[in-house]
Length: 167
Image (cartoon, rainbow, N blue to C red):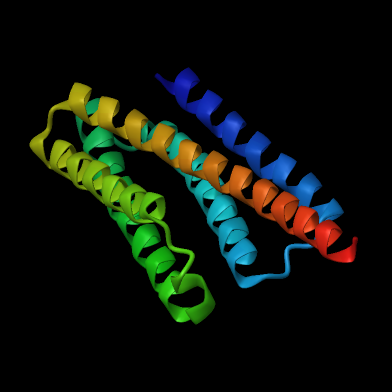
């Protein structure tokens, strides 16, 4: 299981690193692009952190308590991340119009997976907690990848519109 979690961390590092290259070549100055960049980086950081939490806890906790603790902590952390993201969207009036159904649904699904993870952690079923923990990590990597594509496509669309305007 720890090998799988390490692989998730490596993928998250890759996504965050590749984003750094894109941002170095294209400046992200608009509020929506900045929000997506911050979201991508915070989700990548989340995946990296929580990929190593279970392994760090093995030194102090037994297997059952390890997964219960990691599951509850990650579930709460991810819900807090969603709340902060939602508040960030609402704080910038320009972005309210850009909140798509996909953003709203991904937040709802993220909360549902997180609540499932918390319940699995409190229930004491180690196998279920491990499974839902893995699902939430995959979900976070997927949303980070989606934000990367949106940053890339947002700037591609802007460049195309600018070229048409200049012509």
